[in-house]
Image 1 (cartoon, helix red, strand yellow):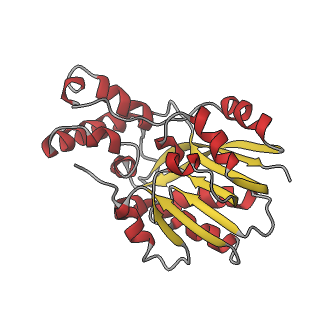
Image 2 (spheres, rainbow, N blue to C red):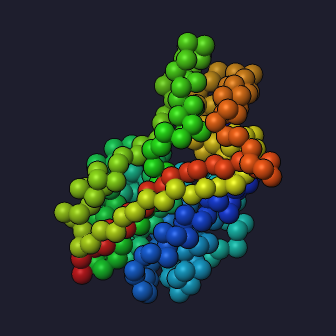
Length: 260
């Protein structure tokens, strides 16, 4: 069964890290003492936090030991912890000046319960800062679900694939605003320039395709699903004059500040 593959995820390190940099740059907490990076993955987001706040004590938490093994070799000075985000949020323990999560909470269900708990772990005057992929009708996202629901494929899934959990921006505002001193929110659609539709397949193979590949019964099925997904992408992403394709990806950002 496929596991998190740090090398595949980091193939697009620059593109995946840019939203993290944009989020960190907007956090208006001048000198945080303690920061935690929830869903830190291979440590690329944690490195951004260490660069932004070099004097802070930083912890990176992730459920994947494969990702953490790479993070531990990254050279970033952080405490690396294997753990579950939901369980961490439920703990009544120490608070952090910045609770940060870059492209991880889409894998965690029940945001109506989760986000208030995350905000409760923020120290007075600190911030909860979150970036997650916004649900989009872009073909690269939509075609995964359509293919999985097709008559050919739906019977081959041994269990329903886990899907992204992402609500609209108004949902998160209504959830956070009554509990925060101030909320800053925005959406950005990044236009990635990649080397053809196979690069789009590899992008999602390191992230959004994983829940679907995980529940297919064999490697042969997984390879066939990837091949058909690649074929379905091609009419929607035509090459530019230089042979590359434009790959839009929309992301949602939210920063909720705790009262003093």
